[in-house]
Every structure is written in C-alpha cells, then in structure tokens.
Length: 135
Image (tube, rainbow, N blue to C red; front, side, top):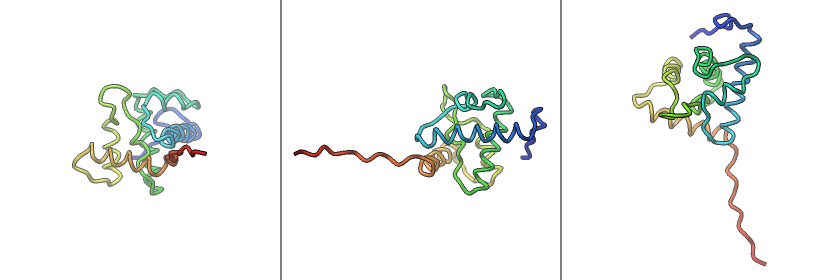
C-alpha cells in the first residue's frame, strides 16, 4: 500500500521522523522482550500528535512493518497490541502481513510465531542465573 505524508497533512520529514520514533519505541519493548500497546508507542512519537487508534497510527505501523520486511527482519509490529480486551494486534496487522506476501491460515499461530521471532532477533540476551559460590 502506498502511504504518503500528504494523506495526513504532514511533511515528508514529519512522516519519516514519526515513523522512526514509532519504530524506536517498539524496538525498546522488543529489546526488553515485552509486549507493548498502541497507546504506549503512540505517546513516544513527539514530532506530531498520534492518536493510538487512528488511521495515521495504522499507516505508521504499516510503514514500519514494510520497512522491517524489506530489510529481511521479523514483523516488529507484532508486539504492538490492544492494552485491554483480547491483547492482540488489530486486523491491520494481518492485512499488512498478507499484503507483504505472508501466507497463513491460523492468524493467532502466525502472530505468536512473529512475536517469538521479534524477541529472538531484537531481545537482549537472557541473563545467566548466578550461582552462589560457597567459600
């Protein structure tokens, strides 16, 4: 899907900065190996105001997903979910995945696999359990 800054009354620079701020916010959660939600990552976009449940947010997430896919990385946006309720990504995640060529019959299984791929790729190493040495 072709996305443009002008669709939302933004300059190209605002669009790029917003997309990168959103990506950074998601990567921070991925590094910590935790899920995040729309409102949390939207709040970290400072160049413009982004309503977490707006078309703008959907398009920014789609653009991040496209960039990650083009770079051969896992679906970073898979860890962005609803804070309450089903705690899953919205339908836009699955629509974007299909538009990028992913094929799946079980959306939940596809999503769970993507989440694990993101944590494996971006997550910090698990700390080793320290054993107490006796003297």
